[in-house]
Image (cartoon, rainbow, N blue to C red; front, side):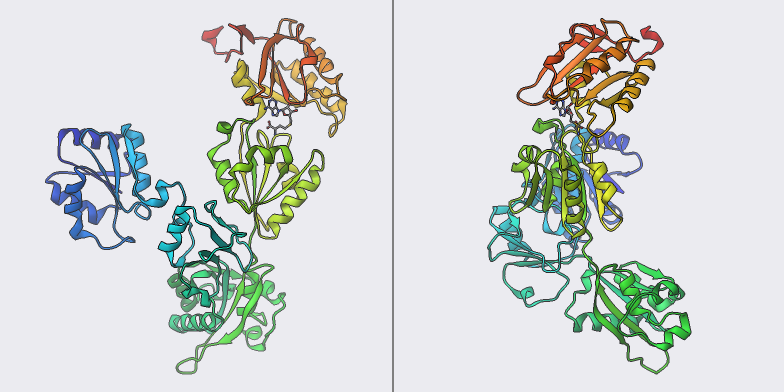
Length: 568
Ligand code: SAH
């Protein structure tokens, strides 16, 4: 809930504005102001105060408890020029709230936490626990000093890191991604980032107390110098899914409890099988097998150990496995060429990647956006399948891979061959890009205002008779058609042939848009007609959009009516 507080009528109008914009999120507090702030501070996760910053500072100062619990507070000045993130910028969400308030009121967000102001994520915002010299390392990151990235147990694809944090850097300031408790913990300028890499398999006899389970887990981790903050899950056999001591242990650790069938566990090779669990639950191993089942392809770091139960009866077993780093494959569309048609999300994925796979000319398009140290696997035209396979292999090895393509990477491009190779052992994200047909349409006017289709005229991968059948179908059904790969030195008859098929159902004067190098420095475009098109102006960096029977040339722009009755 967001508490809204105001003192003046201008402030009240601001409150009403926000309440109208976010009806389900806000609660308006009535005056007197001091009581209102006190109550909102206790009841809400966030506050927007239409009050002077100084006044709010004095009122909340005695209420402050700590970063983890205090609400995020934004103040807005009397004339609604600034939305100031005053308190709880990161964890309280005040930086983001200031931006939201600014969007609604049309004012400027004022953010003073260093990492946000510099556009790099705070170390505490990466989503993984951090330990060590957070302030010193944050300062180095902000100052642009080199920071060494160390990932001793594989890469566990990281959140986006600033460009000065790289594996190749030689520096005393370092960021270590590890589940190990090491002597580096105490080194001066080191931050340890705890990846969610460990799974603890647990077993227990009926009635095993939660404290016994937790003590055992704690000892197992400590003896192997593993950090409890890297535990991602507990795992056990289905039969123990409701064993209170185990369920509660997972709850207290704040991790999920994963359970597996006895059959499945019985099939896993473990170092220490025994007869007792086989008789009780039908598998010779619970702790070791469950840990390995929850960490496919991973390694067993701590073999089974048993608790020392207080009074004999109930006891627990535990084993720890390390998950194989799960790779990430981002399939990223770069847009048609212009930098400002590359989406912010694409930019983010490129920054996050430790490996880039793509055609050399596309890599050139975005090289400056990559972090130094990013491995670039570029290749020339052709070799698509090999490129796809490389991208998937790299992701499977645990890297954060960006497979790039111009326009949208899924349109006549790498997404399909790559995903055809990928199994469910990697994470895949797609980032859409502005495809050539859309970039061209925006230049031509509004040619795609009604049903339309894209057809590639390249008969390298598709037999010509299939292409021809589709062109005929588009012709008959009066679809607007955008031709990709329309013409190259070796393929010069396909475009005239396709146009002649369309001309069987459309007037010779039907508008045709030709766009070469949309959004690039050598962009060229022309609106002509089926009859007048000079195909020699068309090359492989061109798309050709043919209108339907309703498309018109209006003031030199191509316009296809939406087909509403009022336009007829
Ligand atoms: N994935 C790309 C298309 C790859 S097929 C996309 O979504 O845009 C390659 C064809 O796309 C080229 O032959 C050309 O027809 C078209 N194309 C790509 N970029 C273009 C641009 N900037 N201007 C015009 N056509 C372009």
